[in-house]
Image (cartoon, rainbow, N blue to C red):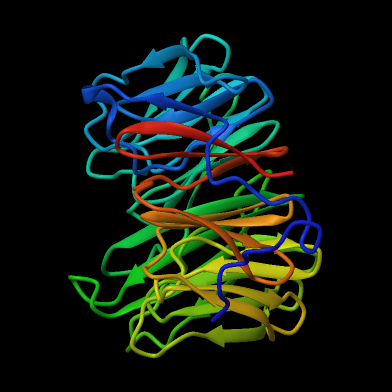
Length: 359
């Protein structure tokens, strides 16, 4: 465990500030803040009683869309090409500048996309459901380009936990229930052809008699896919061309693992785990470059500039290269994941929206 750094100026670069650049209080009706926000150069888009946009410069409220009828709240919001996308019982697109609804795509009755993270690219938004289906919806119109069932023969539930679009491929993370209540489960990474949804390959994480998952859409790092397994406490790498596991790192056997996918930066894979540790692993080998323990289980994390933000209800700022704790912010009570754009990291508590600087 690394202690807080009391004399980091000049040694580890500029000393960070745990004080936000700006803080905007939330109203009583805006405190559903567990989702994953998104940001671009002009705005932060957050899930707080609907979709809310704040000015990146000062946090001024720009617009709000309450999303009437959304019984299942979206897991994340995505911004791409001037549009904001989210999906619960319905997938929808909003105009990024105004919040005006552009289109809606109702999902089949009995299914929801609120348990996983969606993704978007120049042409489409990719939405996964808890009925092991993936939809590619035209970004401009919302029309279905294709749909794929990644578990057509599964007798129980299959939850798409995340989607990643890269090049000509869509990578889908799925948790397959092997029992009615999910006590036995398998994690899958499934590769689909981006243009058609055709199955290219699938990788199984788990034997079917244990408790495994893939926490979210995998991270592309060269020829590798980096993924996390919340249930078994693992971070692992998969060669996306040979479909063979390259390495696996497992944390303490009696603890859960990361709830989100690793972040790859300059040859290292970073992950913040439910086991209280933040890890920096070598991307190629999985060997531990450093690990730092915080006082609580991590809800989320972000890599921004030279720093790692680790949220365990309180907030720790770590040096990305050494793992040294540079500062802590007590009582932050952040419930969302982070959104990172440029040298800013954004997060939401049940009281306010925050912007932090991370040069």
